[in-house]
Image 1 (cartoon, rainbow, N blue to C red):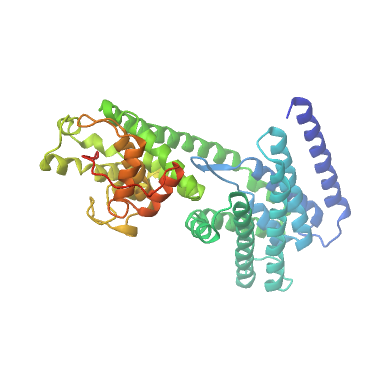
Image 2 (cartoon, rainbow, N blue to C red):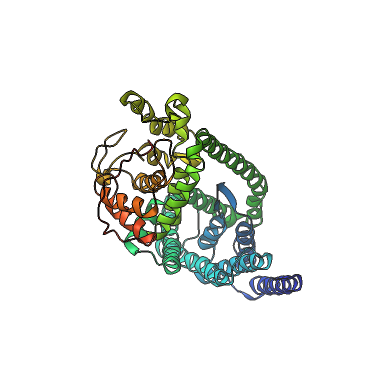
Length: 432
């Protein structure tokens, strides 16, 4: 958008927000809550939800936590379902329109996100009313139990909506996506904390609604603290990648190897339609998969001729060294098992653990295919790099022996080569 368009959008959003506020405060009837009209309380909670949506907390690299769940859940517990849904729709809708005006949002997200918030709040409020049987929120066991049930219903509704819109966008297989979706829900502890904060907000709001905005006071401080933490983690991530590059640079024949393997792994994951979270995890591990070679002696790593058995045993230590090193850093820890096992073989004769077939972590199998291709097509002191045809022929030959045959087939399909190559004997000593 240009500047004039930005101003028009902001003006329309501001007018819509003021109109919404007037409707909530002056038009909507209902029993007062703690001496405050329900419309006014809906306005407070909707405004808090909008602010929370506009300023998400960054909890990891490229991962943000939107904290609007707390005020939205408080609305579900304090207000009738229809009014709670209207507050959610208005608050999130205004926030999304502001994001659109800033250039940080998309038109199609405005309606969906506003509707998702409204539907989640409505079903949560309806669930609470059904279990609490019209009782107002309080600290007694029965209503807290009803609130817990409402939280589960609201969480399930939101997750289902997100699941199906992501499926519609990416076109992934439902069974694979469901598995990855469940696997990627490692942030449930954050959700539980936000629902707990929403419950606390509702308990305070039931008696003193004007104290509810005080819950927003610490947010700017937390926001800045978490931004600083993420900046530190980003610097750490870049330092580990620089270390991996320095290891590659020790040997002119492997210059840029980790970068290329990461790029190949990303292409494979996209071709096999793995989820974005799993893809990021695998690609990040591929980016530093050989960092453990920092613990390998130069006399072995840079040897221009074939390795002796003793030297090969020494270089076989690098996956474990790399796994121990990366396990210390949160951004790399989930990919540690991929780094440790990227030299396992499909037939169980690899190292360091002798895993076979599907016992080898998926990410390690993908990295192995990308690593093998780059090793074969790169020139080494003891041989020239192979052509694409020769490399793909050899990869097809060792599929089901050294490499995962399904991933090899995907790689060959991605590169436009047929798996039906005639096997040829190649005098290879692939890089360890």
